[in-house]
Length: 495
Image (tube, rainbow, N blue to C red; front, side, top):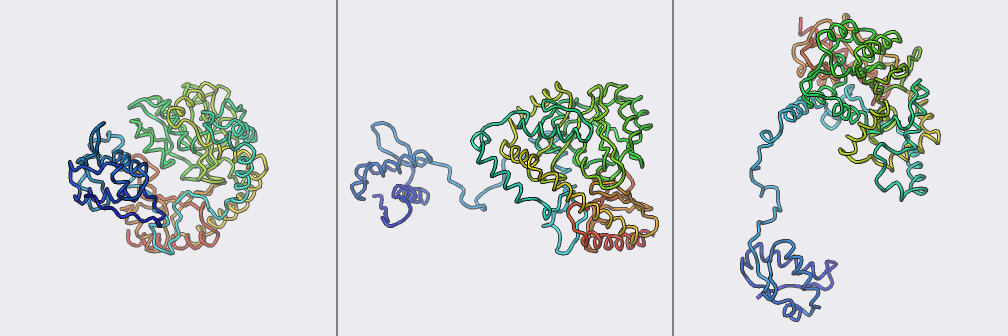
């Protein structure tokens, strides 16, 4: 006989009480495989319940695989694989994910494990982290953005919660086109694709232009996350050394005589990691080389609007008469990284082809967030925020450069960026082990980003990157003083 306890005062529905108790009886084998359950009418009468309540519990038992029943037959307990209720009940996995994954995914995973930057939670308290290129959340205009979210939800909320345009929210594309005109780029809304940050923009371009075992020309050093991404697509890298004025164009031309790559990837403004800004002449010459070979030029303008000193040099895309430049932009390095909105500006057919790839990758972006950002721009909040960012980071960059000048040991050199957030430091000689270098820095209460992240091939172990993007004035100054102390100790050990 099945004995059940029904608590009519409980907040748990009666059918759920029956279900829970039946499952317990089956799992502790009070009810065994093949045992017959009471008919629903008989059990309902015994418990003083409506038959539909018991029927509902039986239907749930059936759906969960604990019982089976056939028309005109009794409901019986069936043998069922038990539900895992505790972590320790799991056994060794049957699948070897390393064997199942393709070779390029395994390499990407290895890179992820070896070169994953330390987060705040990984570091002991008091360590000043000059490593991440992440914005200072204390500067976020949260209230203004919330007002914009509320505004668009009230006005067109139902429309925004549907699937959006594959190419991105049309008013925001118009806004971006308007901002690009400030930088000399003449693109229409139809020539812009909104992406999930600049990183997805790079991924889409690699899917469009990538051909296995062909080469992509990149700067050396370059943006750390583009290296494993290119390799994941089974492409080789043509590393072009960076000079004080930008990518070494003589070296690039020599390499082109041996092998023409699929495209060139460059960061002309405040290059990550070096902070170098290339000159107008350099940009003209780079464009001329790519035009000569009819080669796509991917221009990463991820910090285009963060210039603090000197004259403005317009993007390469502003001179792009023959539509060979794919210009990448993002709001992640000026506004909010978390909204993940970037874009590609390129020739119309190129954008249509990229849109097709994006459509079959993630359908669309977030209509709601894109509409709120459009309102943020049109309400003038972005321009006010940009002025604030310029004021704050002009001061922070000045403090960083002064601190380096006043504390770093003789022989160390560093770049002096016109904008952005990163400074590239070079020591007079190589340190032997990047991991030991990091551990020494942490011991001194500071962290910087080792140079190996930014090269594909081997290099001299004497570089590292500083980022001031997430730190306040005092933190920058103190962090660099601690860094200088660590460098002096390192140089003594290496003697």
